[in-house]
Length: 109
Length: 113
Image 1: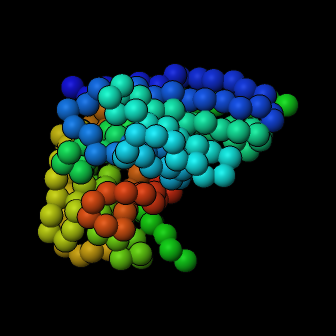
Image 2: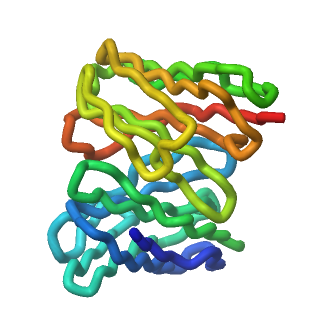
């Protein structure tokens, strides 16, 4: 089977930094995605990693280690609007996608 | 405006009554996909299409059908809906046939009684 694991919930304080981890065990791997989903809305794309290392995009960064089957999403200077679910997804070899169950992040003042 | 549209947005139906959820994108995207989202399970892929007339099963295809006769449209068909298909459904598209950033539709909340 395909396993993609991420914490169910996290809480952080406005202005702080939070790291959301994702581990995966899949039969194929052709890239890892992070999406943000606010309650009641559709997911929106945040980042994509296919090679090992860190990808930075403004306040958000994503890291990948293929040998460890591990990724994290780093959110800096947290804002209240960052309260949302964060979805980790792996593109398998056949171009199909597997998502983790998502991490619900609550940002508190 | 570049977008993915789905219809209907909300639907309550009864077991066994065939239904179709439409999905259309105006971005000339090659890749389209259907997902269902259930609490605690996250997004699960139902079917995907890398281009016109090319469709493949995702993780949970049982009980669903799709077709891709035109590039812009990718309808999801439930021939005989059952209560376990009650879910939130999302359609998504990606620019190339090799899926990258996906743009999601607003979702269709389906209840099967």
